[in-house]
Figure 1 (cartoon, rainbow, N blue to C red):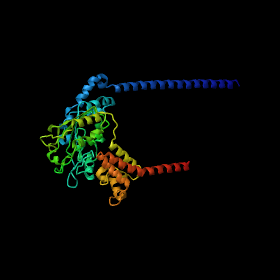
Figure 2: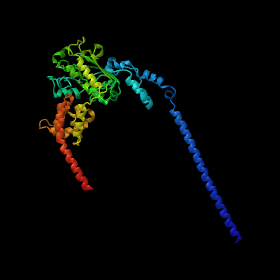
Figure 3: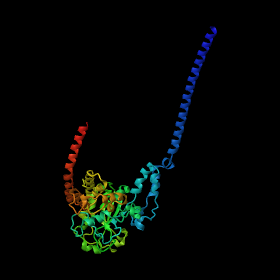
Figure 4: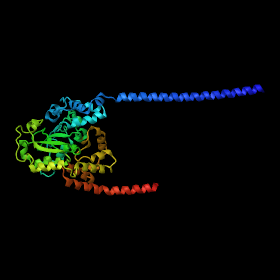
Length: 434
């Protein structure tokens, strides 16, 4: 009996020691884990500190860094026609290193303003047709919608705005102009750099209509002003090229005012200056008379110049018809589920998808052929919404606000009752389900 009690006591003692040993093991493991975690954290902090150190950002003061950025990102050539002479500038070496902007966020924030704000950027607001021939008229009407040019037509407007040989000549468009297929359906608004430039040197002309030259350019400020209207640049210098001798018989009254009309889109511009161009400002001597003879009316009157300066540098409200027209199209498209038919709403009745949107929409064009859009069939009565949308596009392209609002009213009055019915039916269905 005594032996049994001794054995029992020994077992209890061993269990107690085992329990203490297990507890000590847990404590040691916890201490080891804590020590390892602290070590890892210290190593991580040390590695992060090493990665965060940058000789350029941590050693050099901002003034020195800005001087380095200027050496890498500033070249006055971007403000001259020489920047776009060689194949639209695609092969011109500017000696700049804009790749530094993608190294890190801080450098991008410090250097972007130097690249786009240290020197003016040149742009020549011309567009040459990709292959002008007798199929399309070589006519480019004014954008004010007020003059009575005999060549105004739906086709001439569409040709000017939809079929492009290249973008306006500028250092910012040179690579797009190099690859003609890529730029065929682009606009300046699709290039974010246009919103960043602070100073512009803009060459344009009253040369609008000329049926004598097969590859005659279209001069138009509209696309440029639409691209920068919200960027509030510090300065814009407009250089006007006089009309050619062939143009004199085609000029309409107030043609200079019509040419400069798109400047009325702009607000909050630091300064606007309008002056005469010289031959050294034009990339293609064939697009202007070599003598650059200015006649009365070729330059804006002092009153018009002052008015445009007050408008562009002011903060008054402005109705941007091209934005209003896009909103109208999006509203109408919300009633159509078939995407090819939605794209049709963005173009005049005379145009097709493959002519207006590029090869990426070829499949939608194929579908639009297989499933004919009878709403746009000009051989039948055209649907009133399609007709009004087409006319609104033309009105917006000629800055004819009165006509645009009339066409917008037709679209809204036709579709709004349908929208109200949709809302009522959706409420009824929702109530029934609940």
